[in-house]
Length: 110
Image 1: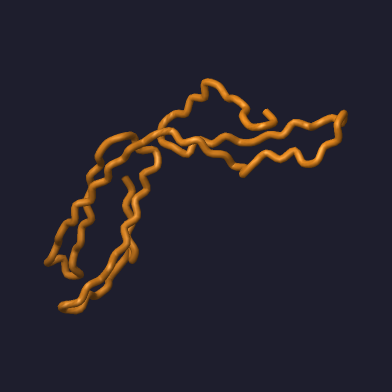
Image 2 (image 1 turned 90 degrees about the vertical axis):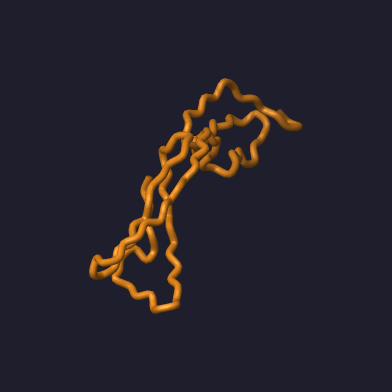
């Protein structure tokens, strides 16, 4: 698991009685189903204070069908004209393998 925080680097000062919001980003690409644990370690400038914040990530992976194109448009055609094939790109946006067993055409004109 890759965790990054914003601001990423210090030093920065949190005045007495004040707060500082940090944004954590997690890159979970390629992770399988399961629970992942890590921690963010905070260390004071003079190394006298140190604390840890546990980070837990529950990953539920699956295959996700996606396409690069929004639609496949053949445009206007004239009956009898040669129609050139169109291609589109199928994308698996998920974390598990995607197996396509069949595909069908549906709609009023299919």
